[in-house]
Image 1 (cartoon, rainbow, N blue to C red):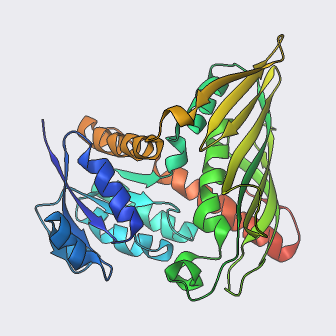
Image 2 (tube, rainbow, N blue to C red):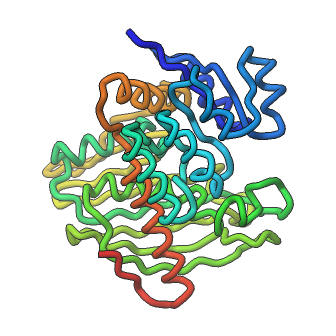
Length: 336
């Protein structure tokens, strides 16, 4: 079977994550790295080809697919040349920081006839994926509402790299990491978002970014969700990282802790049942990214769209744009 030769743009922590995942994926081989001050050094360390830029990566005939892990606001800039040159692309979340940039990526992929997948890895964390399966199977009846939380303790200091530079990372935590939660809410509900009401603000930071907020989403299906995010709660906070969801259906409830466990209580018993305990899987993070990498590679080899398309990535960005607009104007923003 064909072996995909893959290049990675970006030399930060996510390069390391994707390199490990792809190295464990059949029919895939990472052959090149480009972009970032650490790229040349990592090329030497892993016996990879070093390329200077996304354009140089796009121009190589010995690369079939590219993973984009550069700063958020550069995703479209780096992905589009690769797509136009006929390379399949897996782009880290968020897809970009604007729907306009997402549209350009989608158009480039469609015109070139290649796959564009967005790395919303929360769809592959076991607890979140199991929650989706239970919802689809009707284990809790019809899904009606979710309260989702993403909270960490501490403070955010300006000047701490590109993550605190709005020109590279976007407006803040919601677009940078909250996009995972927005994507999984849309995925769990299996419905498009109809309207958003949100408030966000800077909290315990000297950086020019939003670090906290709350939003309510209403879906076309009539279901609703509430999402609270806060990057800078005073220590000790509520745990190292609280990423959890309380999921309510007409016939039961699910308690989903992304990085630790999942419980379900079904009618008529009405008692908690532990169905996933991550302490039994110390390699859960590697498993998650390997599953994502496998889907990217398999979708290309099978000639089918990936599970998480550019349309999915754009939808998350669209919801977040609406949330920022809602907070800026103090009004609910209708999407559909």
